[in-house]
Length: 245
Image 1: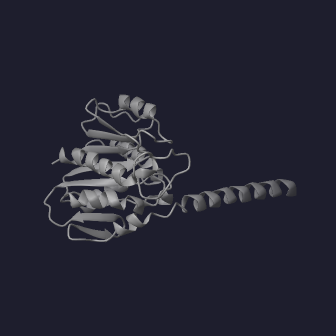
Image 2: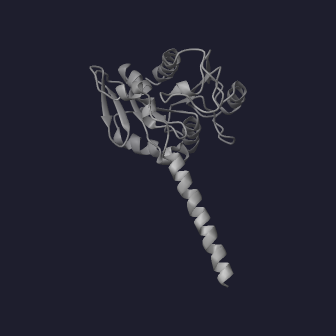
């Protein structure tokens, strides 16, 4: 009997160690780059509010379109502040949502809380990077009618998340040098997306330059600057948002 208790205790300790290790791993993402912190400051075009989410509100805009960003897996959500700031400067409310344990899979439905906080926004788009994009696509699938646009940044829907008959605008953006998501995976994912989906491949772009957090293990080196890749990401995203006016 004592031996049995010792085995049970040993198993429980092992489980606790694994769980603690997982939480520590998830809660220690890379530090955002200086450009990300700079984008957290308000200016003459954009008011930045740091609250439950990062909120980037255009100063002079009456647009009814909003965009929600789901961060990549184990990426500090502040790393996407430059894109959100740039989109707000062009007239669109942009909200970056932090994720439980920095993993969007645990916070899929946070978009519903954002909707409730901004009743003046009647047309919503959602997007995300890598895992964040996969979960954003899942949100669209699980909540038909709530989202009018989906932007996938180096991401694709999970198998079974079929949006081909959904009435939403979709843009999928991918870097040719991405070492974590292949061009073939992006191409194959088009069978799960509406026929009108716009595919944008950024020549020379990689995975990590969809955010501002430095290099990423397993990724390939980019052949263009982060600034150039970011400008193409923002422009392609803006083209989708303009369709929701």
